[in-house]
Length: 96
Image (tube, rainbow, N blue to C red):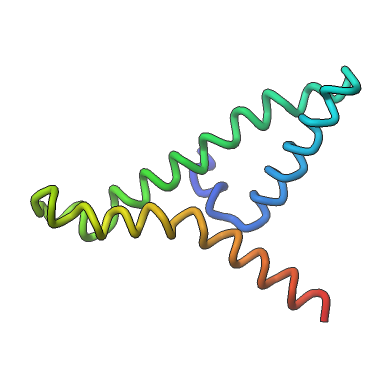
């Protein structure tokens, strides 16, 4: 199982490529293969976010919903933002 794949910064490059291929598939039928792959990969980012939030200390500490809501929301916000931020840093350093 490759449940860790959406946590890699390179996975977001794959999403961008599949998204572009999906858009090009609207104009050229042979490239439409990218659309189902893109449709399968995008929800994996949401699944990774949900799993990471669920495993966070605030969510698993047994706190009541009003107490765990804001920390879980912050974790859910930042969890999918971290791999693209790492990717942007890598690309910025590669261009120097």
